[in-house]
Length: 85
Image (cartoon, rainbow, N blue to C red; front, side, top):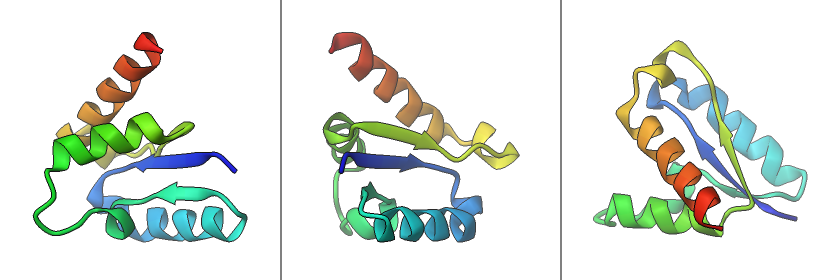
């Protein structure tokens, strides 16, 4: 099944972790930060590569997400990748 990158605010971890587990149980390959980011990893490079390798980007919408600079960067990077492909 296609890979799904989940972009979210850390304030929504409880919901997003459950969502990631549900998707994984249904056979999706899920990119969820707690499962995929290593300590000391170059975040921007790792996220960009993971976005590029994913078939879908799922954005967990919330008020906290709208205030998150990281989520905005992830969305911008995903859109940039989409435009170039």
